[in-house]
Image: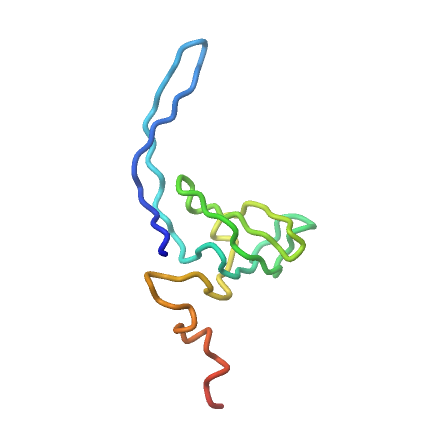
Length: 113
């Protein structure tokens, strides 16, 4: 099952000064290769709980904000981090019907020295 990130416009309705307003928004393009279940590492520390070099699993990517990823660590703590503060360590999710085991970086143990 491949995840589709489309840029279909959507409407946001809000009230300002008692008046109902509706605006049209378009999600930005997805600028990274990360998908849910992939392993990533933090390149720039966020706080004492999420330090540089820590490894995470991508938990969720919102369709309307595809460049902000929700990541979780081994303790179950999660946070939202911009894609440019993360480095993809291991591809685990299926990409366009290709099994993750077919990627060369995931088959290092099969190579002869």
